Image (tube, rainbow, N blue to C red; front, side):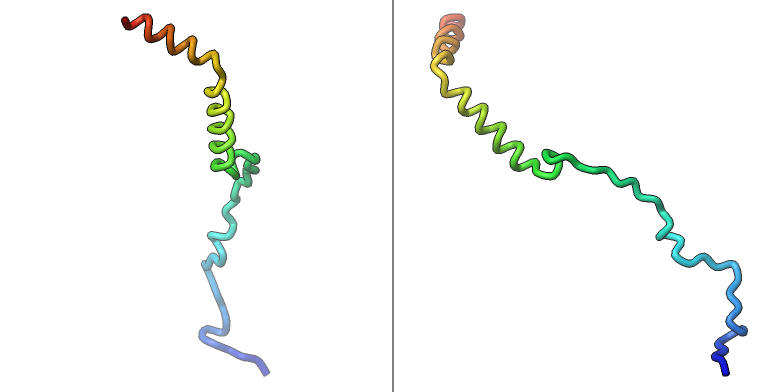
Length: 68
């Protein structure tokens, strides 16, 4: 006893799961590509600490004296 649907279950010229055969190139992201917010926060923190140093006053005075 069998199940016969349609033309005796003959399937011709058909492609099943054609889209699933696409090869996807797996690229591993490094830590900074996965967490760009953390990268921007740390870089902003480092630059703000650098701006707190006192030698910037000398540079600001030098630039102000050039334009006087």
